[in-house]
Amino acid sequence: MEDVYTLEAQDGSARAGLLKTRHGIIPTPIFMPVGTVGSVKAIAPDDLAAIGAPIILGNTYHLYLRPGDDLIARLGGLHRFSSWDGAILTDSGGFQVFSLSTLRTLSEEGVEFRSHIDGSKHLFTPERVIDIQLHLGSDIMMVLDECVPYGADYAYTERSLGLTSRWARRAREHFPRGSRGGLLFGIVQGGFFRDLRRQSVEDLTALDFDGLAIGGLSVGEPKASMYDFMASTTALLPSGLPRYLMGVGTPMDILYGIACGLDMFDCVLPTRNARNGTLYTSLGKVNIKRREYAEDENPLDPACSCYTCRTFSRAYLRHLYVSHELLAYRLNSLHNLTYFLSLVRNARKAILSGTFAAYFAKICALYPDEAEAMPQESGFLLFQKR
Image 1: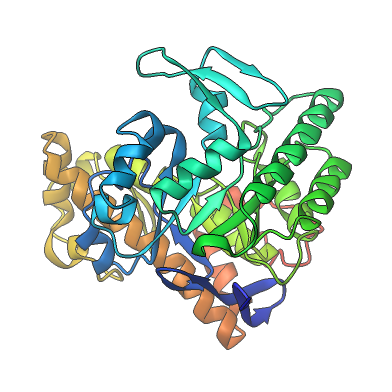
Image 2: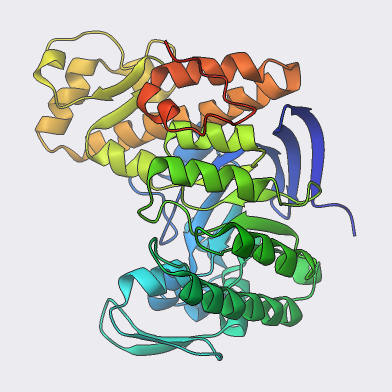
């Protein structure tokens, strides 16, 4: 089978590559907008196309419960159902089962849970989760795993990892490599214990997945711990596979992940913050609610070429937001997603040109508090304290 991932260039540990999917070749590093129920909130597919998003996420748990994977399959799969021509990655739903369901029972077979919508009882097994994602027509599918909360002790985390690894084997056996055109990624767990993270990588590498993801970060741990385990876990991953960091997503988190050697990122933060009036710009964060923007005729970000920045003033964006106009959600989300896609796109250019160190330092200067949390012994810590 043709390689899924092609490494084009490396600058330090940062990588630029190409990820091959049924719906196109995706240049990496890449940020993937989150479309939980088959829609990126407040954004239409033509908006996503306009800002150059090649891939989005869908959520197995939510789509299974409503409208149902069988219905979506009957209507031609998630691409046709949502009128999205790009690639789609669907997560396994495991995180949602453990975070949204107050009644759940974990067993060797899988996880039984009650819907957060109507309380009905359901069972997710490793095999069932794969079948649901096949119904959706996903380009990249994730295996069922247990996301261990921060603070879990060693004994619990070790037991959980054993179960997650056995589930991963069952998922791989149910969906052999390269079958039916889609890709299957394993998920590295192991909490905040280095030996368990290493064991997880070894377990998954033996199963010949198409890619590997790092799960179980940004679950309440201090920022410094997240960065520490992000770096140490990435260093264990095989170089020939795409590497995906799940659900971690401030601009500095993403840039640090790229510096570690990660390729794929997703987070609800850009659209969620857009709906709350927090916008990311080349000059730093802007809280558009603030009175200081009431008569500001300047564009939100003079360095941004998105529709929002080309067309509207800060004063108008503030007016929309404080007036609770729905257009505020679209315009703010459009800009924030453009910013995040530009962040990874420019990182890729810097890697290809061998100037990633300078780019890293430039972005660090915009987010000094997060940069301060980076492990000081890191070989790619390019931010200099002043």
